[in-house]
Length: 250
Length: 240
Image 1 (tube, rainbow over the protein chains, first blue to last red):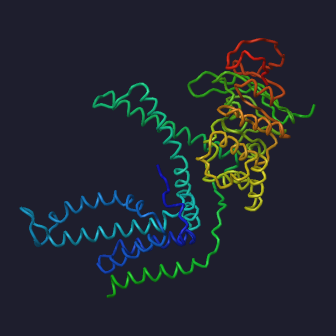
Image 2 (image 1 turned 180 degrees about the vertical axis):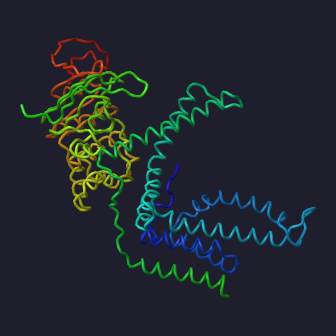
Image 3 (image 1 turned 120 degrees about the vertical axis):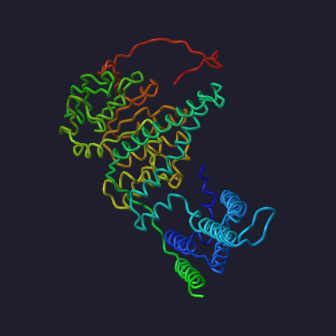
């Protein structure tokens, strides 16, 4: 399911305080999302590709993770260039491609790839539970952090339950067809998953109460100081500053 | 005899729309008792544990623990600190990402500092021969490991009484052996639910059954013979 493919990295980025990485990625995301200047976007892309390379992520995995986004982008490229309003730039057969359409597609593509690769290098290099604890230290509301952590923990259990149900259907020769029987069976499957998940939630809550849970998690995590932290902070602030200058000043 | 740690009298309980699971049940547990409960599925053993812990509220009857009647939610906070409950399904008990965090969860809730909680957690893991498991991810443990880590999470709270809900179910013989040794090495009062008579006879001193919503003593040893088949059965051998 979730294989945390990048979380076991040992590059220098993995050693930076997770809180700084989250803040850096968030700041970068905001600036890139609102930028439209091609110089700024290209700089952002180079920056995030540089991060991926220096984090020593497996390039094959990076490309594979980008595939889903590429599909979405391909759809945009198929539709937007000729359907967007504006003067016709050139014609392919009967359809006229507009310049603003192509420009918009390029901007969206650059932003998507830059943001995805930046998050892969900065955020995906930590495990989900590190992410949760770091978010909690960043004063994110406790409830949201628990939701993240517990969802992550029980996703696997619910997936196992799903597999068990599917196996139970298969061994009794269930083959999906276009019939009411199939729809009903799938409805039962989903309903059963919900029932089981809520039962599970009740039991987990009981177990937590039995161990003195009173609504507050106490985190054991400590994020040790690291001289690279300040290097990373200054680098991030510098890069984001440069992006702002490229977009709004120059 | 000293006053009982647990004194349940005339407890009745039924689930909405069902017939009574517990019906006028009396149950006492004294210090260093080791009681085994064996009864068919659906006879209310787990319900009994949940009533003791205050997770379910009995329709009638009184729960007395450590010399005081317990009725309100706030009464049970102390009960839960002094009684540890091992759940049937270890996945219900282990919710933290790593083993060490899960074992330290209880002690932290009891108000221990981070250092104290970590020390207790490590000690407990050592005691259960789980050294080196600290950073393992809980959902990736095997069934037997999950059971032992669950036990660690309960023991780390340093309870006086341990309630175990089918602790031996689904364990291989080696892990079961380890569990028996660990349980016999504990200086605690125990109540064990199990279907496995062999397991109960090695860990419990008294064995009760639950019938018609009440507890019955099943103390007499019955001599009996039974036949069974297994490989190499022709050769003289002993069953232990």
